[in-house]
Length: 359
Ligand code: SF4
Image 1 (tube, rainbow, N blue to C red):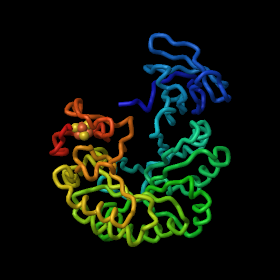
Image 2: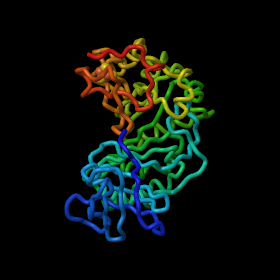
Image 3: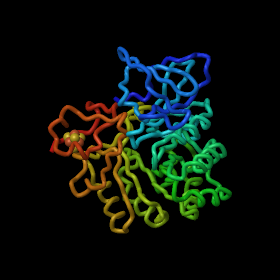
């Protein structure tokens, strides 16, 4: 697994700071240049201080943007220069308790926006950065101000924001319109049946709040990616949800149907929730057929390619972030591996897909 945190050493009296590992000559005062490399320890210097990083090669982190925490002697790789999977965790707070949540909420919140702003300004040209939680819009004013500040100096960047869609208001319309070409909103909807959706997200009245807020995003012309994790609780009703989406949310750019991640509550509730689409793809296939017939976009995330019938494989994205992706021993000789999403690092064969068939 790719390390997102590195052991670092620097003056413990310093406040946390953002720095970029320079590729060649430094371009700004945040850029750090390599000063030494001995026995697995790299020495760097920027305009503020000197610091060291352990157990990493210079080429692995060239161009990366790091948040260095001197007190804990850790360097967080906020932006990996060569990865398309960079995400800022805005908060761990959330007002929902989804059955399969991979990042169970915590009550405390640490405001990191100043560091995120410094990091975004150092991002590679044209980068799309994910913003997730928890629920980022619990801190909506700070989030919107952060995005405004980033765009004020970096008009080449864009954000993919994961939100439960509970916190939009009519007053947000002008702001949503202003940034509609540079923000992609990933919003979950688990069922067209309010009771089922509310049961899955663990919040009474969630669907009633979500529906008008999705309409508001449509009114703003916002780019919308609807997201549905396939679960035992909703799998058989996906064709109904597809019908609901095409009739009520035709402005959604795509509908991402996703397989579950076995971590957090997803691990705790795996037996209760995992739907093995490798042995039963019928309802997914029917839902996809309906979406295609009505010419609305649909994507499959986190599906190993051999679990998807050939007629639908063009929809399966290599969606699992590189730092938490793995393949099974059986995948070694598979001709589809280069285009297959593979598995989450924490996937277990014992209670996972029944039909994994190298091609
Ligand atoms: S065998 Fe492995 S690499 Fe091949 S399609 Fe299945 S999951 Fe992907």
